[in-house]
Image 1: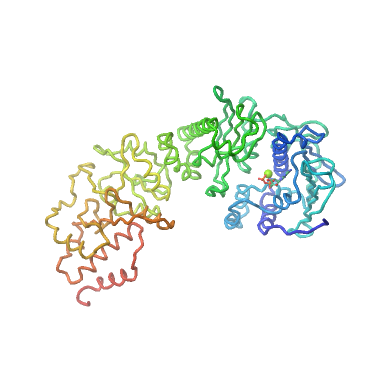
Image 2 (image 1 turned 90 degrees about the vertical axis):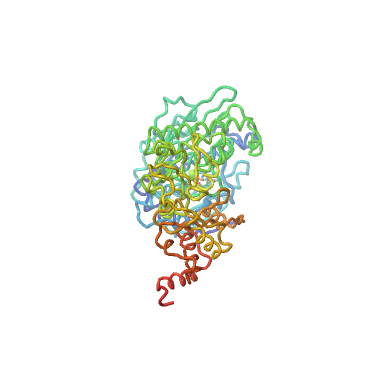
Length: 616
Ligand code: ADP
Ligand code: MG
């Protein structure tokens, strides 16, 4: 094969341009990224060599070398790790395989400071070389391939940023060597002290030696096995950036050595921001699994339940066999115990943040609250603990930010109140403005405003909290008794008085409604819809329908406000009675965020009713 010139994926081109400009103020991180990749490559070699010892060739000591050449104005990082084949180079270096790439590019603003943050979140890894270099050469040979099967890859910005060349090469030793030909003005990097200082600052946690001039610059022991009191916060943070492929510091971490029937070490981090692919179920990330210091796999999804999939870090087991595979992980009982242990530690950490670091907990909730909510249904054994960690919007302050815990709610319950009330809707505004809240607002009874799709699922799985039932304000009969200090039956209505009106409304609406009755919920609106005690609520039905699912047909109950002027004026013998009935129904549906079957009909009827009987 001869030298070929290939084009970068369009996103890579764009990323290169942006990165050079927006990460320029933090340019030394390129070294951390290259060393991080070299360390990953060493881990992968050690793992593959478990079954193929010959991969070590005659060079069993894994290490990373960093050197520079003043005359050539270049810095080189080389490793004797797994290396890459030609196909792997094209796939790993020429494209961004991350899911969510397109969404990421759409989210860029053009504002450098903001975009720098975003780019950091996206993780730029290898491409950060181009912050300090305008030409990057990579020569690599995959372990196990003959010396003549190496590959030379080069990208020269001067020749056009959109292209790279790839050609066959000779390489006596396995692994990867990356050479950065520095940009004008970057000569300060051609200095031993400068490079060593950068390595110590960002890469001390790397478990294999990083060698300059024959001497190791770092401690070269796995960070997680060092005693806690010998690890600085900076080291924890830099290690997180390496395992989490993240540019930003984590929010919090927990580091434990567990002894007993099972022995393992866990170092688990909660990131400060959600990754772009948090909702991508196919590419689920997870923890790195090591067995007695040997890297086994990335993204071991079995080590944590799905609702904690945002956690990053390392688990190092002393008990699992070295040949453990994903298949074995799926069935192993040891893994169940490991997962329970990791889950407990993460929940402990969240408890601690919620109790002692409220700002951090607020950040956590903003980024990952929606994921944690899944745990209520998914992890019955920790349901109570998770319920304590939940935060909601509520009528207490009518703010969209979710800050109210169930404990806060319970502490504010009115005398005689024994239920936790909530309303669910498509959006915060729809929830906040829901007519179902009117009587609750009047009596100063707090209601949780649930406006997240997953909330429907949450309440379906959380029938009660500390003995108090969670109850929808839009379902069944409402019996507030005299909570809030007033007599029941606000409207003081007698059903008999309205029997004829209700009967006629029901007849006019036909099979749109299950029943029509006088409401105890409304103080301002003329009507609302409620679900019968055991029927599915309107919001959930709409969510399921939108997701293309079959929804059991359950009709709503129309409740009318007997004290409302429209209802009081409405007489069974009215000429336009059917139109009034329709409008009362449609308004109720609109007010709770529903869609009308016949919007044009609604508009026509309201217009005619507004014009009044004289003109009709
Ligand atoms: P990330 O490390 O987050 O995957 P990078 O941009 O840093 O992203 O690297 C992209 C990919 O290129 C890596 O996942 C790896 O497959 C490959 N790669 C980079 N550097 C090396 C190396 N020194 N040895 C082997 N593979 C490498
Ligand atoms: Mg990397």
